[in-house]
Image (cartoon, rainbow, N blue to C red; front, side, top):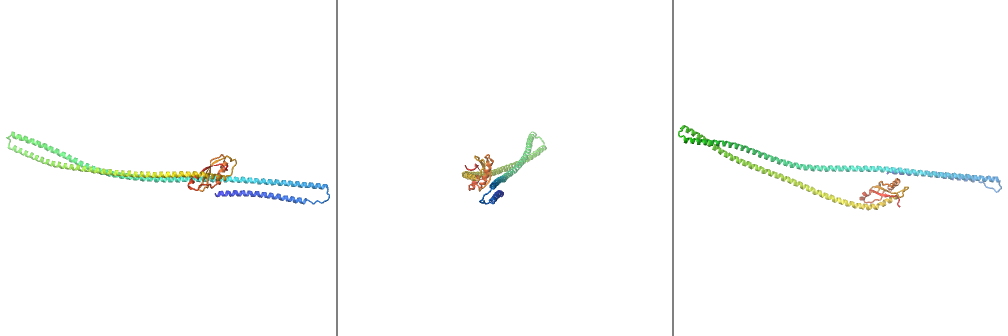
Length: 434
């Protein structure tokens, strides 16, 4: 703005100085002409002598007439010279005015070029600001995306922690089950070892039983021999009695061992029953633990499903509110656009009249029209004007853009909400009203 004012002052001063120089030239020429006329009148007056009423010589009269004719011719020549000087001065004045007009046009072209350069710089600055705004918006979006990713990561870590706790509980239950199973297996191994010992003892008892049957057979054989041989000696009978006693002792020992084995079998049976009871109790405890773990998992799943359902309901509510807000915003925008169209149709004729009033008609502009795109600020001041659709004449297009700038500020609605529809608009420019 400061450079524009300085250039306008310079142009004004240049034009004023040229006009003053032309006026001074005209004044000097006029003064010189008037001064010469006065000198000639004084010369003529001084040459005129009073005519006495007496006879004069014809030759003197003729000489006087010739002198007067020469004076008239000289005066006519001086008038012609003065006229030529005046015409020359007028030509010089016109030439100076032409040069001044050309200088003014050159300065106006320079001013227009400077304005175009300023406009280009302003557009570059605007593009730079828009690029900076886009960069800031992209940075803000990136930060929001990072925040969303961080929240999703935190939610994932929370779910992973819950899963880890469930896995720990599961591993703890598995460890308890394995400890119980190992205990049960150890007891089963002990029972199997006791069973093996029992079988070994049964085999020993079976061997003793065989020996008992063999002894009984031998006793029967001896009894048979005693019945058959009555004549055996007393020594043989005593020996036989001793053998019988020994075998009886063996039989008693075998009977006693059988009783002990029966008692041990009873104890083993009771121990096996106790082991079976403990195994059943361990299995029952394992089943109860598994049921509790299953109930805990079901509870966790139900809580998770409840949270997911709550989140789904919240998301649905949020989407519903967003949809309502979007519909309300869309309805508001439609109403605002309808108002903007109405106001636009009302203000565009006013804008065109103001631009046409500021327009300086360019040569050969009849029938031409161009579509101009104008950018303004909230108070109507023109920020930029470009030719959207050319008329085919650069001079006409340039005169239109200059007229738009001269007509600034343009009439626009007072409503701030409507400014977004007026900050950049197009209209058809056809010069002066028909």
